Amino acid sequence: MLQTIHTKEIEPDVFLYDKPKGITSFAFVQQVKRARGAKKAGHAGTLDPLATGLMVVGFDAGTKKLTKYVGLGKEYEAAVRIGERRDTGDIEGEVVEEEAVPTIAEDTVRYVLESMLGTLRLPVPAYSAVKQGGTPLHRLVRGGKAFVQPVRDMEIRAAELFGLSCAEGRCVVNVHFSVASGVYIRSLAEELGRRLGYPATIENLRRVSVGDFRVWEE
Image (spheres, rainbow, N blue to C red):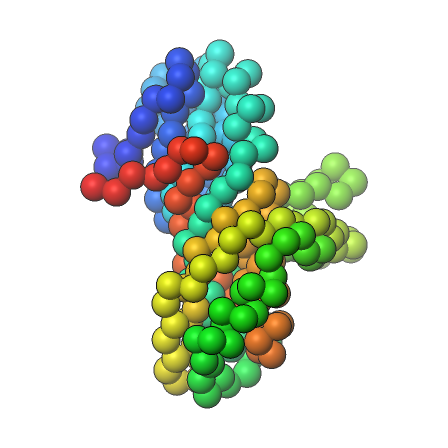
């Protein structure tokens, strides 16, 4: 699999990678670390297993250079499924709420997306690496432990609709999000659904940029 992964070096020991779907960020970084024969590796921003796209990865001395990339803004292309909500915030989880959606007008979606611009205070997904009492939330959830779902300010700089389709009681809204660091697109998807009056979840997600660095297509 690693032979097909695209990579570019942006400074000594710091690389851009296009993470494939179906692997955690941690496991992916461990794979590329072994492939490069590095002793240490780290990254400047997690992607969910479902998501693909740009990751900044540092090896050995490059791990000390990652802090300047962590706070950079990011852009995503998201497919948001309207009509169901899942416990993980994406289609890999279990359905916890559903409602048939007959149709949604494009103008309505654009109006709602515009209303979301700026800083929103939203819940952090329970299935996330955010720590509570020193333990990642996703471990607390899977272990059946009690936790308080945190909320955080999330800055949405732009949200552009580029596709909408409805069939069989579900709609899929395709949105290009430009956001500040620390934003969970799963949280934005659920908020988009809430403002449209329906449950929602992420169907597909791709990170297309980190700061001025863009993912490349071949």
